[in-house]
Amino acid sequence: MRLSELSGKEIVDVKRAERLGVLGSTDLEINEGTGQIQALLIPSLKWFGFRKQGEEIRVPWHHIKKIGADMIIIDVPEED
Image (spheres, rainbow, N blue to C red):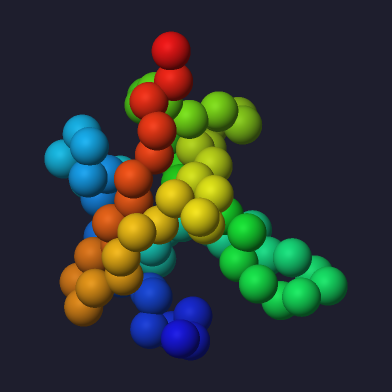
């Protein structure tokens, strides 16, 4: 899949049924050695369940469960 095919898709958390953002306004963390996407970096001021880095939420790639025509569905385990 090309990066251009991901652009514009909504990112939705399946457990919370919340829209987290649109991939066009989201940064990607890429492994320079392999070229693989490591994580999505979603700009946000409020949202819990992820480790915040400044004003971004880091969603590791392995939490992505499905990439559809309009959405990217993520499933992140709850933190205690």
